[in-house]
Amino acid sequence: MGFITFLLVLTVLVFVHEFGHFIVARALGVKVNTFSIGMGKKLISKEYKGTVWTLSLLPIGGYVQMKGQDDLDPSSTSGDFDSYNTKTPFQKILILLAGPSFNFLLAFFIYIAIGMMGTKYISPTIGSIVEDSPAQKIGLLANDKVVKIDNQTITTWDDLSDIIKDSKGSLHFEVERDGKLKTFILEPEMSDSQNIFKEKIRKRMIGISPAPILITIQYGFIESISFAYDSVYEASKMIYLGIKKMIEGIIPATEIGGVISIEKVVSDASQTSFLALLTIAALLSVNLGIINLLPIPALDGGHIMFNSYELITKRKTNPQVFITLTIAGWVILASLMAFGIYNDINRIIAQ
Image (cartoon, rainbow, N blue to C red; front, side, top):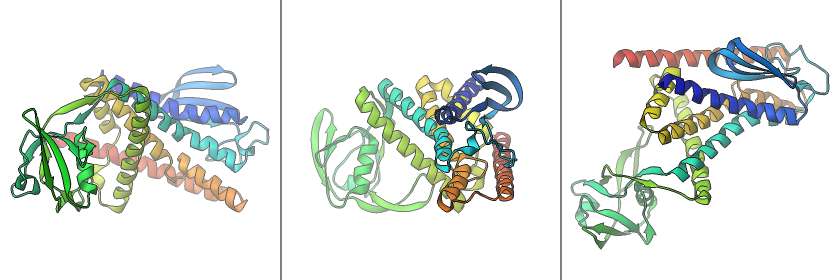
């Protein structure tokens, strides 16, 4: 059942991405010859309004093949008015951006649904206190619930953590203890820590960790829009930084996961709750959008790079250079996929 859920999620994400390309291409007058979900051998094909809609054997992606477009043979062009290669570079860029943009939009709407259904956060309740820390010295105790810091209402542990991290002086804490409110004033100290990429950093801390208590916050529709925007932004930033840290070598290559890892994450989420599945689907949609914007020739980002060059210089990319870089791009993508699967298999063996 988990594998079927994975295929359904992947199919939806790929369909939305390719539909973005399709809808903008059609709006700009480009004929779409084929709309395929999956790659390789065609299993099911149906022509509708001039486009062959296809379900292919390998569920690892999809494509929209437009009239006059052939990545591996730039010479096979069409001069017809409804051809992709007769459009301006700016129009082509709009078509290329549409796929990733639709993935971001899908994630945005999923997060709206999550916000209205109710999302879980860590409660701002203290679980443990470090000895000789600022928190212990001023008398904070385990099970104290922080309700305000400097008159700012604290709803989640993230609220508390962000205020302490960004603070510059003493902080005025208001906590709930045994049903009564107590106030404390303390000065955070610079301490050694790690970020999510396990890099050593220093930040302001008071020496507390959270209790294992989850709370559910349910947003109204308007609040959910703000929640969705923040969630897409934070997910995009996290994925972008993850890619950057991997290129810099801070994140080891062994952390790269492949389709097996993705299937396991989706499967586990589906068995946990529908809300968890939606959250993973939203993250994967953002991830698909970010990955496709990378300037690798075989991806949308690579084609945007070629068209930006033409837009700026008023010259087309040399066909041979285009073919060489596109093949190199496919080799890079295939190598990354193979390496991800290799890491997945090693993790399974090590378990």
